[in-house]
Length: 452
Image (tube, rainbow, N blue to C red; front, side):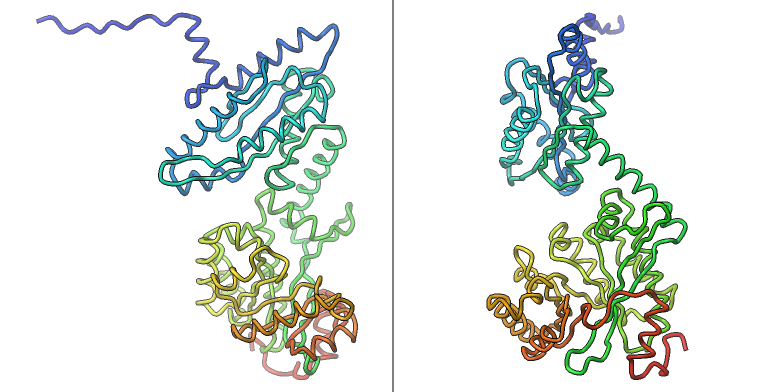
């Protein structure tokens, strides 16, 4: 009996080339097709360099969708994205898929910034419609970066790098953003990269400092705790605001290292305070998305020797909303260990009442936007009254932020607000100055210490 023979049809050169230039999942062209199309255009327009545009679209927060619903569902969404893009790009344009959730465009008839932005707005709208996964619908947004030939680069690699720089700026600004490359944007991104490296070095060399702002009882002006605030004074850059470097650490993925350094320093300083004073410390949205956050925090407290009951973690509503299930588990684990949780900037989010219903907090901080207008704006006064009444009913403590003068403090005290902080009671100061402040202002500094 003769063995069966399997005959394979020969694959032509054209078919092999088509396969090499095609994304197997979506059927779109790949990065090589985009490169060749852009190079052909640049050759055609070399003698009279009429502009054309390339762009990159990146789906925002696609990885959590993949993790939640599975790789097959993720692939289905990518195929639906490809179908929409093929259906709406203008004649003569090319759409390709690159790695993962990244798609790209070559746009021969888009000559300037306004045209690129209008195209980005149209694609953003198309991609924002729900994606059908059978038993559920999913919504996504996309961020965009565009680069215009020859201003952003004459070679394809330079042009692509410029589009990637523009995309990166969009991602830094939030979801659904559109950026067209310019020299100013390139300089901005270069400065951000330099700042990132300096910050990384500062963390490694232990150069990030912690300052402390007092939180007081409004009834008797006695100190009840301190909020830890990050400070960075670089030898070359000078003072860098935490409003700049903390978000940068989040964006570049090393907020954990920064936060661990700051918490360790703050906890060590708190050991020198009277035992009844608490330490308030801010958690970032990235940390509330990391399941390892609770164990990391408790490990630091254990190494330093600070009682978890003396730690209060401040979180914002926006941070809670970023990954509600994970945040809920982190909060539950920390509260079980004795750590208290405070909802920061209350009243400035979009669904604060829902957060109070869905999460267990110990304290609410009234945002300074209301406090600063308590004596000049009846609406702000009534909002503060409502917050205080609601928190009393929910058995939540309240701290008013940003108190800057006696009149504000008196008004809050008359409304029944228990605690406050702000420049009226003390500006943030380093650990040495904080100890001096306690010697001068606290009634029992000679009492027991945490590590006595």
